[in-house]
Length: 77
Image (spheres, one colour):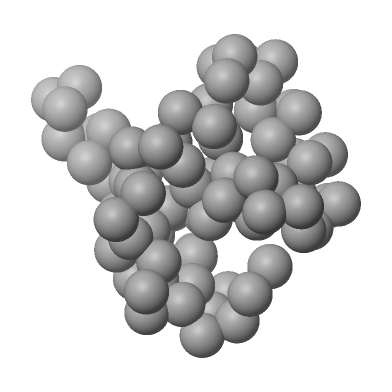
């Protein structure tokens, strides 16, 4: 059941990212981590800072795990 709930959260995250013009196979936190690494999106820094309070290094770790994603992104953050 735990894995099922986790999969639902990831699917929701990817759906929200897609609604925001991102690659449908990428999570929003991975997309924000990439934008930060590329020196864009000051708002992303604030969101990732908040996520770091819950899960230290979250956006950076997800960005690295999703390094092969993002080619279908429509809107850059």
